[in-house]
Length: 358
Image 1 (cartoon, rainbow, N blue to C red):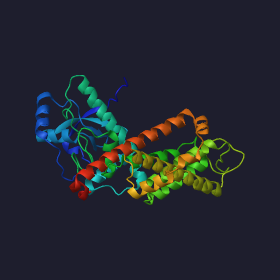
Image 2: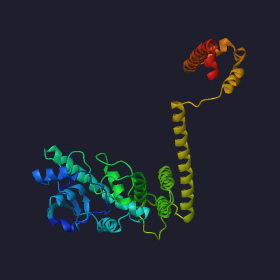
Image 3: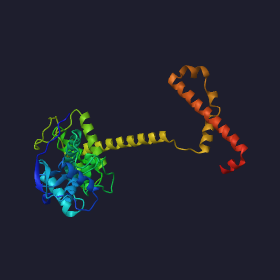
Image 4: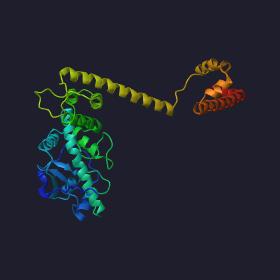
């Protein structure tokens, strides 16, 4: 089993702990949690940054305030950056979502996600050793951008660390978009990636920060990675650019980057079109499109007398077993279809009222 992260604990005054949002939202029933803490103590202290910004434990903090405590034991995350703490603190002062660039949101999301993962892991570990967690079973205690039980998207015990992190940064369940941006950022920072692919990724981030849609740019960057892996001699940076990576016979130019971007965009669009076509095919298989009776009649006209154009011996000889199975399946479907129509026509003839309703 993977060893859980153990954060150092400290006793801090409650007044020194800053909550990452001041908009009034219900934290659920705090009375039961407060009674549990009063009876057995604070088994799982809240998690704060080194400078006192609450990262996890809004309900526990509210419960001890209700009990009249003036100080509390907290776990201190020493690696939560000053940028993250400042961002959450600014969220507290503004009372609304941060006005961050998408790339800034993604970087904070990447930093905040493991904090929620570590907190959840420690609470699970405490439960396994027979100690009730401070939040009680199945309750979500993350601060979120607006406290617990928000209105946009699912809330409660089933929130994942990705969902909690995206809510804390953007106020929405936008983790898929943030994950995509984070992957593009990773491409720009990977020295093993071809230089012109990194330039394509940098251009994508610039466009995204200018509020361009994320998914098309993400797909383009992923396609550029595929193309670079297929190419035996992708270009690298010019001699005057200090960039690690394999040396290739020719140097990169702005046109190399532009050509890579165009080709990657073309591949990304082709992939997207193929995905959409496959999805449409699955939908059609699940619920076939209804066609008109006129279309059925015209199809039957095309088939009328068709068997006279084929030689039985040649058909029997040339059809493979798989092809013959298809012919037999179609014949069986048609037989069942015609039998069912015959029965319905007989019922309509016997019941004029039903025929008028149709």
